[in-house]
Image (tube, rainbow, N blue to C red; front, side):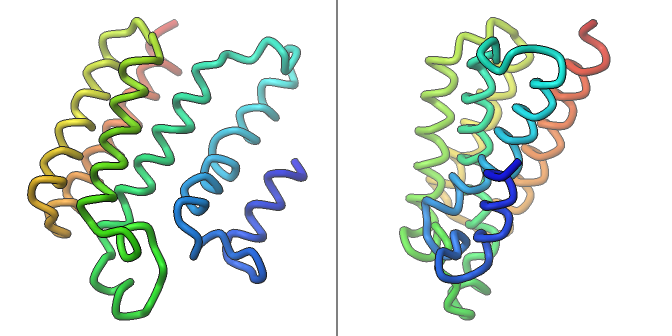
Length: 162
């Protein structure tokens, strides 16, 4: 819980302000949205040492998605002098980083579930399209598709895959 509160607070507050330190901003999101909540919930029913290693791949996928999301606000962030991943490194590099991270997840995670594999291939395709044509409006549409897809996959595993 302390780790969660640390990252929530210092994501936006100086002197650390992870929000303006790419790629630390993406890693901070792992420690805000994925690992501490998962560890906390899991620890109520089992030993933390028995935690499924695949959650780390999910966390990396969230980081890749976060990096991709910086493409959407590239123009306003640049005008506001916000130091996001895509402003500092470029839209193509953001899409490529998301692509490579997701490709590694696809190759190394061993999820053995067709639905997850199809979803990862779907994300890879969208990241690659934006790498080829770094368009903010198209990235926004793809962002929504990936986000919605994540909820569909999660819903399947949490409620339908009993």
